[in-house]
Length: 293
Image (cartoon, rainbow, N blue to C red; front, side, top):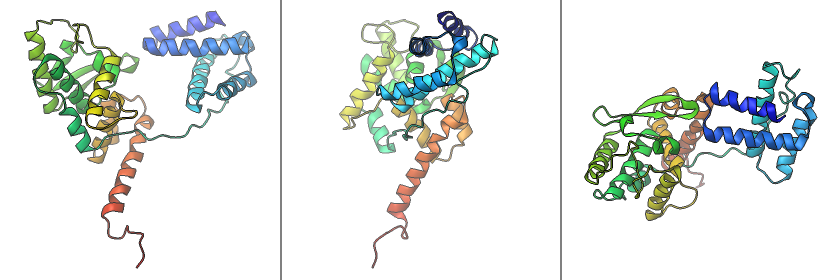
């Protein structure tokens, strides 16, 4: 099965433009599947795929992880079927384990304003951190997108940023005035230190800031305002989307801004909006009180 896996990974890389992270994840999932079934791809049956998924859950993996691994196997076998290597896709009718739906965590307007104002307005690292926090909330970027920004990707005059999203899909996003001002202040500090690297955001050694570095920045300032737990750059992305929805933005617009390939991915934010409205109703509407006279 190894040759088929290698062929499929090359297809994802060259034809689908999958990221290096996605390629590694697919290869790991498919190699684990191959080790489990110990069969040629041509001999794999539906019962093998079901047994593999059941084994994931029995071994303590979440239903979300098991579902993701099934999706990898399903895509792999679909590719082999389409290319004529197998007679059918035995994973096609295997049901995905239903995971408990978790709503994205997001911050209130007061919390996000407090968060972005934590870094001071002078100094290389402080202005860099302020620019990152402002940009994460202003444009809803993924952590990989903000870490991958180059100097040429940001147009402070027009208030635009060009990012390379998942599947190597490029999109151009608006940047709010506060974020533009924060980026300008950071660029002044960068010039003063004579740091000319093409990467927009650098670490304290003058090298491009990593995804992990961006996460540490968000966690650091979140703790400073008393927020802990599972907060990270993605929290600011969720906050960006949720606040837009609450302000009346069209779901299709939010989909484009976030770079979601499917509207169904964006629709999870409608649940947040309903929760938000119910909370307001319970607190403010005179008929919401459950107390009896």
